Length: 213
Image (cartoon, rainbow, N blue to C red; front, side, top):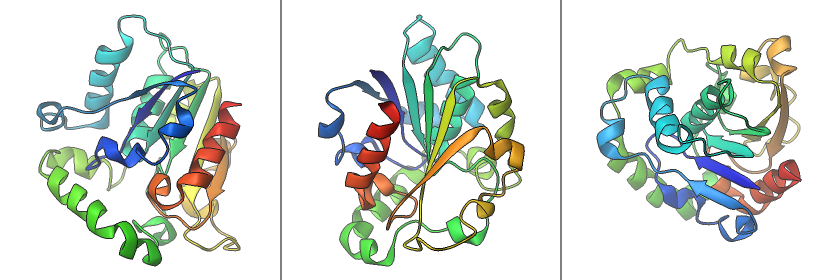
């Protein structure tokens, strides 16, 4: 299958390194946003437009798009376009509305010791390359659920369970309406927070592989 991977804001392409070998059987485009582009984008739609013009406007076809965090919102924007024909959209820790506090953490405590320094250094390095307006668009009073109405293929949501398998409100705390949840197939990845591809790459890869079929 041919797919596109989109990382989140303040991230870098190396977040996919732990799982790249597993997906060699597929033709994956690991998109990297140029800094001169992100420094100008004020909305997610602006960055989505760049991805479309760079990768899709020349009639390239993809079987699926996987997006992490902001990359998931971009994936939704692209998948909702009539001229883009995707079979599956996979959202990884992509929040369509502001969530409850359960989801507002970056790494499991034990993972902070293993990869925290690398992750925080990445975030600090990239923070200056995103506009204030784009940061606000991802943090305050946002609602990206409208794109779900225009997507007529399977949409999957992968979220870290924060080490709390039995927490009863995991789906509730996404703050999505029943009709919005009905448009998504949600799965949880054990012992991970916002970066499951780094915290639990094996289960992350297994989940994605199962979705791709």
